[in-house]
Image 1 (cartoon, protein in one colour):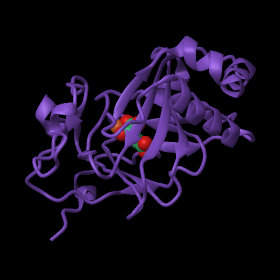
Image 2 (spheres, helix red, strand yellow):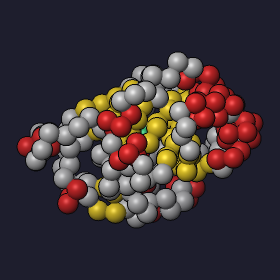
Image 3 (cartoon, helix red, strand yellow):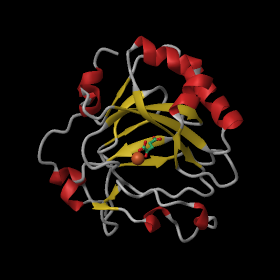
Length: 215
Ligand SMILES: O=C(O)CCC(=O)C(=O)O
Ligand SMILES: [Fe+2]
């Protein structure tokens, strides 16, 4: 039987995401994909899930993103390519990090049809991950995964958590990574790529989804 996490809900949660109105977002996606293919070797036979990028290099090769950030006076502090290869990627429900940190999550490749699910799980039940949490014993290329689990928090495995919300990443969203979430690519889909941009964590836009209301 499924476990309804809403019985634990102590207050009305604000939505963990919000679609942003960015008319040329597909051009950014195409340029980010070209950047990853031509200037990194991250898309390979056994990709990592979480791949921090060199911001200067991204901005040099993705002019449409540079324009977008300038137009909205947004100064990125971290950019990460998130690569989900159904053949080798293993992800659990997780929060990253534990305290609210809103960032932009941008679709890059094969995001339509896949969903990111959100769960209302009390923070007290989350424990910080260790390297092994990202490893699925039934999958082969385990040695490839690095320890990226500092700052990633997991709920206990001994119950089935039911999602309270989900989003199909058809356009960029403001995304609160501190709300436990899991990624579910469309069945039979090839690798799915998303891209995330962090801003100074002390800014209002990093502290609340509602601060993105003007976009
Ligand atoms: O690509 C997604 O939908 C979410 C990936 C993820 O786990 C994250 O950005 O923290
Ligand atoms: Fe995440």
